[in-house]
Length: 222
Image (cartoon, rainbow, N blue to C red; front, side):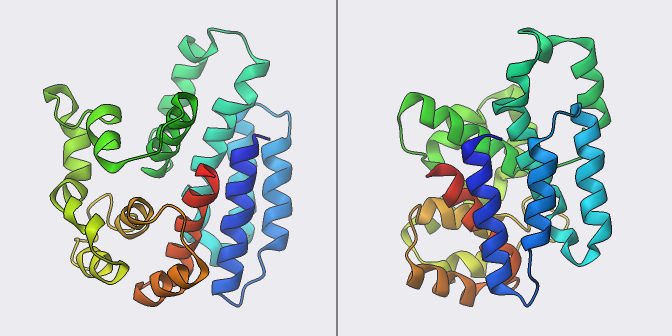
C-alpha cells in the first residue's frame, strides 16, 4: 500500500470517527486489507463496495475511498504489471466500467503527486491553469466543473467562514458542491492547526464529511 494513500486513509477515518459517534476502526482494517491485497483492480473495487454495502451509514465516504483505491493502484499496484499496462485494451475497458465512479479529489491527489515529483508546493492557480488546463479550449469540461472555484479564488485571502458561506450557495447538482469547502480550505491553509480545524468544522454544514476530506488532503500532501 502506498505510504501517502495509507496515511490519508487512516487520518481521514480517524477524523471522521472524532467528528461522529461512529467508530471507524473496523472500516479501516477492512479497507486496508482490500488496498493491500493482490486481487485484480476490478476485484478490489468490488471488495471495497462490499465493505460499504455492509456499513450504509458510511455511504458518504464510499467514492472518496474509491479515489484513494485508484491512487493506490497508480502508485503501487501498477508497478507489478507490464510497463504499458495503462495503454492496454484491458485498462481502457476498466476505465469505461468505472467512468462514473470517484470524485474530483482524484485529480487533486494526482496533482499533489506531480507537485511532490517536482518538489513544489501545491497552489490553486497552478492546479487550475497548469494541471487542469482550464484556460485551454479543449478542456472546457474542466472549466465548467471548476467554475465555482475559478470565480472565487479571492477566498484564499479570507477565512473558513467566508469559504463556507460561498460553498452553501453552490447548487447541489454542481459536481463540486460537496467538495468546494474542503478543496478551497486546503488551498487557504495547507497545514491547519487544531484550532484551525475547530473553526473549519464549526463553519461546516456537514462537519464529519468535510473534516474527513480536508484531513485526507492534508495527510496525503504531507
